[in-house]
Every structure is written in C-alpha cells, then in structure tokens.
Image (tube, rainbow, N blue to C red; front, side, top):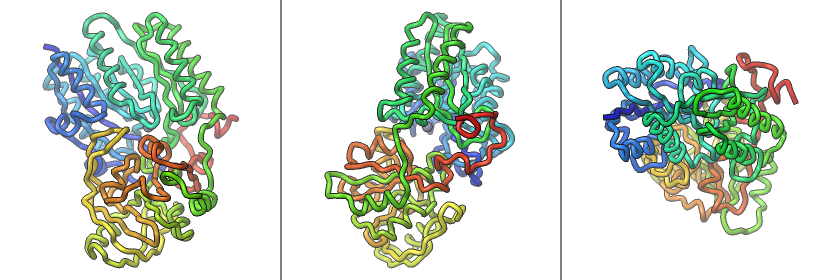
Length: 492
Ligand SMILES: [Zn+2]
C-alpha cells in the first residue's frame, strides 16, 4: 500500500521584527499534532485538507505528524525549528514514505540559517534519500531558493492574492505526485530570480496588472511538451536574505536547458513590469479626511492600514492610523484589530460597560506609533474564538485569546490578545459588529482584506503612513544579506 507523509510547517519571516517566532507563537496560531491535523483542517480551504482528501481518494495510507503555522514575525527560533522539523523527519523514519506532501510558505528564516524550507528539506532528504518524491506548496510571497528547488521534485505556488486557491494548488501538487508514483513522469524543478527585491505589483491578482499578465504567460507554457507546472512568486521583501525577491518556477518532466529559458522569460517579464502598480497608497491625513467627509453610500469606506499588517510581520499594535481616526472624531466606525493583551485583560477585569482610561497599543516599538491615551467604554467581551467565513481559508479556526471591543467616541476598536490580520468578516462579526452596516471600517491588512471586504465596500483606501514594519518604503530598512545590486534599492 502506498504510504504518504503529509506535513505543514509555515512561516513568513520579517527579519526586521524584534519578535522571535518560538513555539508559543506557533501555538497562538496553529500547532496541530497527529490526529489533530485532520480534526482541525479537514473541510477547510487549506493545503493539508486537499492533501488528505486526495490521498483518501487514492486509498493511500497517510501519516500527518504535524501542521504548524505562526503569524508573520521575526526569525524562527532554533528550538521551534528543531522541534517541528524533527517531528517530520521522525515520522519519515518510523514509517518510511513512498512520497511526501509538504505545505510550506517559502519565506522562513531561522535564527541561525537563512533558508528555513531548504534546511527542512535537507534534513528530510537525509532521512528518506534522493529517490522518494517530495512535492511542496508555497505561498505566492515565497523567496524561493535553488536549494528548495534542488531538494523538492515538485514546487507549486499559489496563483491568487488574496490567497483563495490553496486547496486547488495543493491538489495540483498531489496529482503530480500521483503521476510520479505511477511512473508517468520524473519531475524536476527549476527556479530563477531577477535583480529585484520586489515586483509584479506585490503579486496582486484582484485587478488586471503585472501579476495577472505574467501568470497568463506562465499558463501558456503549460502547452509546451514536458512542462508540468509553472509558478510566479512575488517574494517577501521584508526578509533580509540573499535570495529575497520575485522568482519564476518551472516543474518539468526531467531537467533541460529549455525549461530554464522559460523561467528566464517569465522573470524578464517581471522585470519589465516592475514600475507598474495597481494600487496607489495614500497618506493617513488624506485617508482620514476622505473617510470623514465621504458622501452617504451603500457600504462602508474601508481603510487598510498597509504599514502595520500583522500578515506581513507588522506588530499589529501601531497606532498612527487609529490615533488620526480618533482625533478626527469619526463616527459609526469599527477598527480591527489592535494587538494589546494588557488592555484586553483590563477590559475583561473591569467588565462589560466599564468606562476605561488607558494607554492603547504602541507597546512593542513606539517608533511605529506610541501608545495613545484613550477614554472609552467596554462594549463587548469575547474569547476571540471563531471559524473563518472565507473566501480565504474558510473554515479554519482562529483563537485570538481574550478580546474586547473598546468604544472610543464613535469608533468600536477590537482589542486582541493575539496578532492577527483582519482579512475575514468574522474579526468583526464574532464581536457582534456588523461590518456591512458601518460607515467606515479600518483593517490592519494590505491586500488579503479585499476577498471579504471588497464586495461590501463602497470604497477602498490603502493607507501607508510609513514607519510600520510592512510599509512599502524599503529604503528605511538596512539590508545586509541581500544580493546587490537590486531594484529598487540600487537599480531603477
Ligand atoms: Zn502571501
């Protein structure tokens, strides 16, 4: 009977963050062992769910020692990395697999090595040898290294941003494993990178633009003999590693120079489109002024706090945008989320209806917006537990810990004990805030929020006040390990 090892080990590491990514950080998001993996993930729109369904349909025997995902933050500690990768390698040792399916991110940096996924694959290869096929799925924001491509036979990345195709992409990877095991193909992966730190409009696919165009070119290559899969990654620029930046991936039936030429052609297209963007960010002042004076409309004006997106490693407690909203006295407004476990607990201690006078947010690094002195009322208390509605990762469970809604003037602020990007309506609705009925919504998110809030928004304004860990201003950061020269730091 065919035996398949399924595992997930994800992280998007913002190496400029001072928050280490330890086992606690994994527990705060998702750290599932053995039987918990199917229990938590079956029926969700995630890669492990797709792997499990596919293997089940093939009547394959599966082992699933671990699924681990942490919110983007600083480097992964050696302890966390050794623990999680150790579980995967140990599972391969006790039940030697015929094939391996891994759900990874592709931008993991360890505290003692740059290429987390490459290191995981190297340890796994040491156990299973060179002949057992490995397929990995990556986030569209992966920084893909030659080592990953050499150690995995099949590398397939998401093609949507917001990422709503995780299940489908994982199914494609599993299908390529099936064909490999059947002896139909001998897959090999080629990756090339350009002289760019960022590109393809950060990978946005919600409007026609650089990413949708290069993906169309990648799709066209699929009709060429021997081409099994093509991917384009936008990269994750907030990781200071040698190989950070956009990449093109071709999975082919055996290696050949022509497949490298195809990847080169895709990356050349990425280079040519580097100046084109589908979204223009605006200043905090302009955004809040517009929200204040927006004419009555069907659906809320949505403000996206681009510079402090926990989904890209932002601390989630930066206060610049929120302070400007409070100062402007916006009414009929909701904000999700501010990470401040101390304030969430204070609200819980004082109880529903309590009047609070406290310092909110800005505690991890006041450089990104100092704590703001607010007077408000506790208008909701929740355990912060719910299942996402989707379209992104629908069904996945979230546990933010003790959560409170602190209402300051006309703004309902969701204060959490965990760092989460608000890309789903449940971040509001679980606290009985109806996002559709608000005049203004603010979310700490740069692009993913569009999947859930785009359809209800009367207008979307992406706000980059600078200074945050996910601001688009790369020149404020000092890169030491990145290959040079690159666009936009050295090349135009
Ligand atoms: Zn991503």
